[in-house]
Image (cartoon, rainbow, N blue to C red; front, side, top):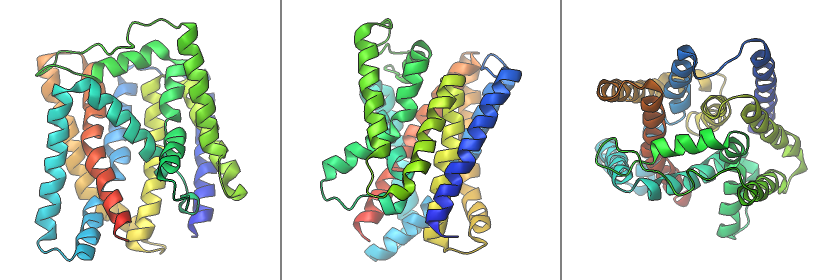
Length: 319
């Protein structure tokens, strides 16, 4: 199927899923106080969510073939794992700095990967391109802050560590009340998010991107931040990214999605096991499952995001 059609259909399906889940929330109250909700979110993230990076080994092979490097298998895994470990080390020693770096890069990544290839602007102004994707991708964060300010700040506190192990660091904006200056800042950010969705060269995709924006708004309006993020990350970002790269790496065939599931399974399984073991080990030290899952989820995703984005950047530069 043509990627243009696939993108529009995916936006439609995700919007319908959002509506159904929001309606369901009125009948079955879903919140993180229910243990099964927290565990379900974690399970979805470590399976469906992380699976979109399951073809990074094939991307690495593609890159090394272009660069004509030998022993690509060994070099790729050593480089990828080393970067992930370095990010973890830097995170736990300079938590606040890397939290904001991660949020900025993740926003850019979300905005870029959730946008159809045809709309990946040919504008040579790299700063404008970066800002446009950041404006689009930061919607999931801005809306969480807008609708659930205190809870979102709490999550940022949990994952912004600044000690050798489990000492939590209070970020600068923690403790601020819902004051006029914060409200105004978020209004400005929301306007930037809207601009990021409508500043397009092609009108064909306007409705689908607006659907994506509206879906993210509704999810954060109705659900707690971690639940809203899980739905977005797994069923919008991950699936769209998987559809795009399975087509690029495996070809536009009827079996490309099936082949993607098979080839992405090993790395997805390893990632899921590492995340699960990490939660278990941290839980042994402090029996507060919510904190352990939040910490492992976002710090773990951060450690994978940096090499993931770097790999895609190098592939684009060498195409």
